[in-house]
Amino acid sequence: MAVEIEFLYFDGCLGHAKARPLLEQVLAEEGMIDSVRFIRINDRDDAVAHRFQGSPTIRINGRDIVEQADTDYDLRCRIYWVDGRPQDYPSREMIRAALRAVRVAR
Image 1 (cartoon, one colour):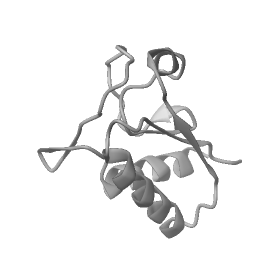
Image 2: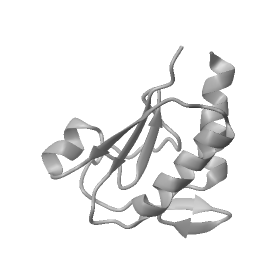
Image 3: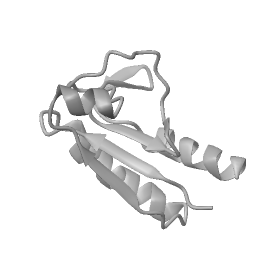
Image 4: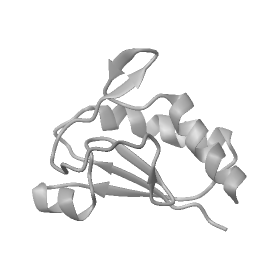
């Protein structure tokens, strides 16, 4: 069973430029060759249509790697809390944990 990975972003936030290579590295380390679907969000309509919670957002099989209750979809930068500090991209460990959870659920 293939794993569906979506990487949603918009150009107004720089965190996606850091998150993309991290995602690719973790996929390689985990031996997962599943392709990533890169989705650029261009406007608020795109944000609502894709349930976009901020840039960058990574989903695996439709589930956000860090679930949030926020449903106010819009063009904005996303903040991830890593070791108690705000960061504009998810950590390698967040990505890896989400991938492994999917692998276990298979």
